[in-house]
Amino acid sequence: MTSLDIDTRSDIYSLGVLLYELLTGQTPFDTKELLAAGLDEMRRTIREKEPARPSTKLSTMLAGDLATVARNRQSEPVKLIYQTRGDLDWIVMKCLEKDRARRYDTANGLAMDIQRHLDDEPIVARPPRRTYRLRKFVRRHRVGVGAAAAIVFLLVSGSMASTWEAVRATRAEKTARTQARTSEEVTRFLAEMLQGAGPSVAFGRDPAILVEILAKTAARIGTELADQPEVEADVRSVVGGVYFDLGRYPEAEAMFRQALEVRKRLPGNHDVEVGDALINLAGALQGEGRMRDAEKLLNEALAIRRKRFGNESAEVAMCLHNLVGVLACDSRLTQAEAVCREALAIERKVRGKDHVEIAMLLNSLAEVLDFEGKLEQSEALSRQALAMYRRLFPTDTREASMLVGNLADTLRKQHRLTDAETLLREGLAHLPPPSAEHPAQELPEVALFLHHLADLLREKKAFETARPLAREAAAMYQRHADWNPRERQHALRVLAALAEPSDLPELETMLREALALTKKLYGEASPVVADLLNDLKAVLQREGKVGTLGAGLDNGSLPAR
Image 1 (tube, rainbow, N blue to C red):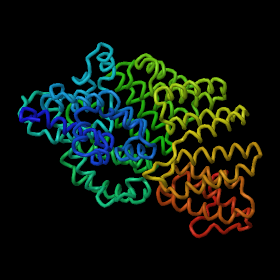
Image 2 (image 1 turned 90 degrees about the vertical axis):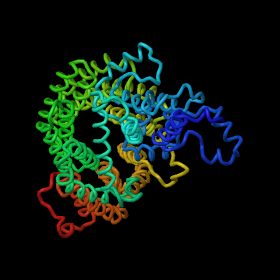
Image 3 (image 1 turned 180 degrees about the vertical axis):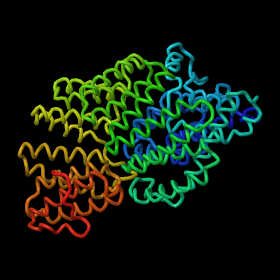
Image 4 (image 1 turned 90 degrees about the horizontal axis):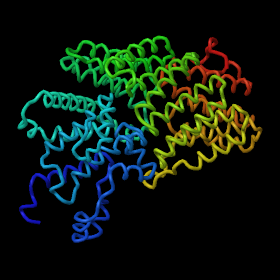
């Protein structure tokens, strides 16, 4: 290497390494292997060996490692791979080119290409073929930026501040800087709030701590961000989203409603952001069981998207997909089916043959048809959805497990219990084992399959085979406070149906612990609390302990089982 080799493009390579690590949690080459190989071999590897693309690195990780990487980036494993594949792969690999002449010339060139990716415009790093440009045109203005892309943009826009100032201040550049500053403020504010949370929160093991942090964050937003309305709206949306994921829908509603009001007051045209806020709020209302209110908001958002993006757009299809869930939950199944078919037709026209959104809509339509009793049609669509998803993501067995479970449920309703059992056992066998780094890390999908399989075996009267599966599933839910409370309640109900008299004391203890945890995390008004109380009363009756619920637990107005 000579002095001629050291210029801005050397810094671009370093930035590429950093971007790679931000996206995947690992460096392009294994650090331990490089150090063990010695200096000469290290140089040869860096000079001659091509690293795997970021999306390839993610897709070949052990399941537990990938789950951790995705969780730390506020994403799901399949979504993170999907968000990284394509533009971000090309951008990072252009930074890491062996031939420095093929890297970005300047840091500003890198920053502008990332901005093009965020704006769904064709990037410089990728060959500008006609099909690629057309695909980018279709996706233009798509709402929402993946966590990985946001991380990359924050890094470059922050570290390249001096370069930005040297560029002519066009209108687009001013907008980009404003967005970057807003993102940085959101990141700073949330980082301050998360200080002291510790690794227990990062690994999702103690949601109670996170709930406490969220409450403190919510209390500070109005005062500390009053003079930064865009930042306030973004932070409220993020906090509302976390509340939503935790199942705390009233708190999510409050955050989303305030974010919507702030968005409406912002000067200029913010109709797209207002539409997004309407969809968020509708989701919280759906979680609270207020389907008619949620439907009204979704129709408002739908009108905004139709006007902005046109009737046949991915944005409209995504909003229609949200509406399907509300209509189905409100038992308006005929209308839900029609809306789902409309959304599916749009997605097929916009996306092409195979796409994750098409697979998810096929699954949703299958569920609606299942509820309508059209089981053969439902089965056919479920199989289409599962086959498409496996073509798109052949290594992602965790996300596919949801589709497997839905198909098994439909088969069960057709009284094809053996077929359903085979499908559940195959799905369970294909779920990834714990990683070497986190051997104790258990997957909620395993517990889900176990208690559904136990319930099916109970229906087949294979009680001796079902009981240990039900016990294992219930024990897993007891070990993981952050797992789905409804599935925990269902697992305990399955165990109760299989329990022998000698099992009842332990089952009573498990129900009391689950009840206390659910009340603490989700509040007294949670419908899961009511169901757990009913389940506990039934077990106490079997034990001959009528009237021994305990102080504050007796409730004669609970809904019937």
